Image 1 (tube, rainbow, N blue to C red):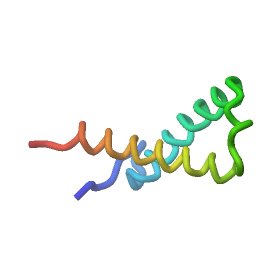
Image 2: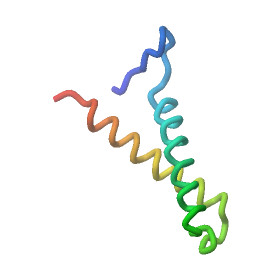
Image 3: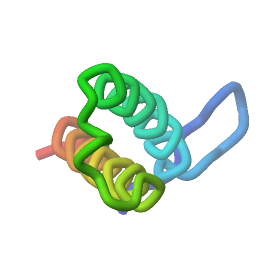
Image 4: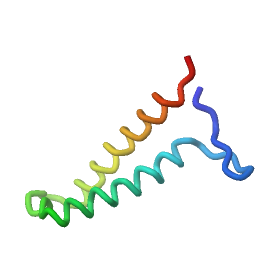
Length: 71
């Protein structure tokens, strides 16, 4: 059971917190991809951006559950 996170007395789902963190990280990744010019190779940019967000969200969720799990 993951439980809830307490943010100043308000209980929120960890997925919401992870989603915000993943969104900020994916914004940075999209900025780097735009600087490098990698979007010239992408067929459908919004779909690609969604895929990047989902991959980052999976990584953030895996990292948080791995480092916060108690033995």
